[in-house]
Length: 174
Image (cartoon, rainbow, N blue to C red; front, side, top):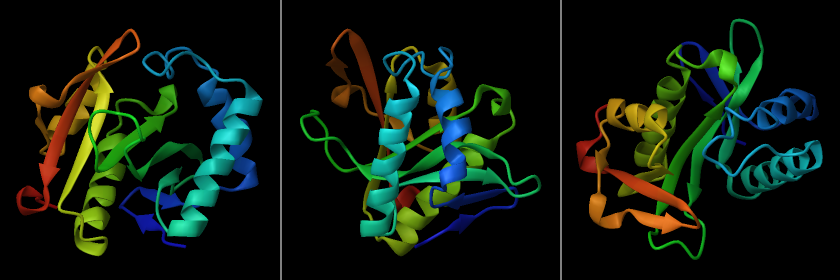
């Protein structure tokens, strides 16, 4: 299984000990504000099992994020094919971190490692990011990564307007 390391973070496979902080994070309405609301512990466990299975089968996906200095689990980031049925396709980058870790640059740092992995190791020609129109924090991360908004690809998903950002391998600056 592939792990990615940055100066402050370890992107790794999921451990059983991640379930409690993962479930607590998914129960936080602010963390889940643009994701359809809080999840139950059972829903969080099911998501974690899917993430684990995908990483085991493919070697990459939604990795657990750990702060190297403390060993604390703080959320996830990674790469995954866009869900079937959406009007865009390709490989998506994403992240979700516990609220107490917001504002420390962790999302950008972890996402940079994922972009680098996607372009250099996986040979992807392009990576995209999708976020709710009102999720300005994620939009800021996308811009810091050098991604460009593609308004022609924006779409409605239920009651939510989703916006699409893209970056091509040729434009990636690690």
